[in-house]
Length: 98
Image (cartoon, rainbow, N blue to C red; front, side):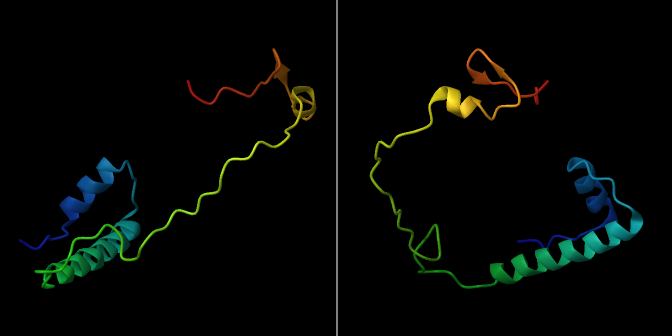
């Protein structure tokens, strides 16, 4: 695998793709951080992983589920009693998506 070189041009392209506006000082700092990250991944590439089993996680994962239990809930009017605004028996909130 060819090592990735972090150049000012690459950094400018990445910042444009991420829609970031970087000051020169921020760009220098980010360049160093990206170099460090890429170097770490290059070190990982050097590890011999032949014969190791594939795994999705380094530790086992167990779901701890509980059975659903029906419990009493608030009546509609009681829940709406704290609403700033209410319409047709529902909470009315400001529009957040155009």
